[in-house]
Image 1 (tube, rainbow, N blue to C red):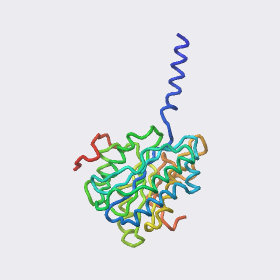
Image 2: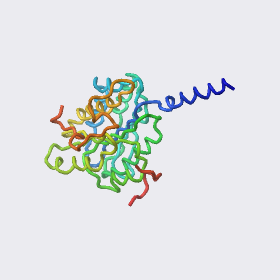
Image 3: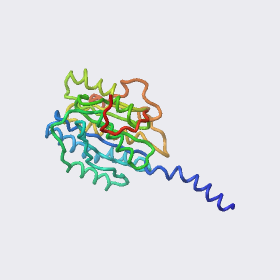
Image 4: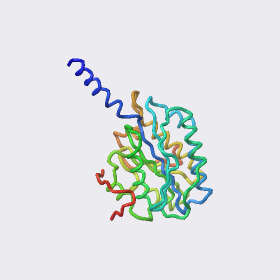
Length: 267
């Protein structure tokens, strides 16, 4: 009897630790809408691959004993979401290289669709639902335009499982005044979701690699487990920044309970 109680007690103590296989499930979403031409699409894919291999991002991946689960998908219109790389546990340098190679060799699945951000986020939420069990969940949404097809991000957040998901954004700005006036505020006010969410700004597709590198380093380094806490409050998911301006990185700077399906009609 005593042995049975001790065994049960040890199992109870071990179960919370065994429940989480990794510290972060990170889904990266790339925009392939009609506004993104062939050359710009290549800059995204090769830029993401290069960012993953950057020394600072590599170090951020392995800044904790617990690994990161990584997935990448592309998105545009209501029915155009395609997985580029399904969930891969990043446990060593070989895993990072394999992920970067798979992304760099991928080909876009569509060229003529609009920008359906709500559907892209719903797809990401469903993808996270079958991710490895991790302490945190993040969607990293990149785009060069605002929503113009179907329901928008706020409706997605109301109708899909986002209560424990952070959504960060990467605006691909055309380096013009119009982008500063409309696109950046749209992402800031509609796309960012969850405590600690932040926005990175790329000044054109040529700047995508740099912006992605900064964003990945910030996302991965912010989850220091078993060590000292981050000195940057934006890295701490339990303490969101106090104002919106602190949520945006520019080039000059070096709860829903619905079980709706991603393709469901939402009013």
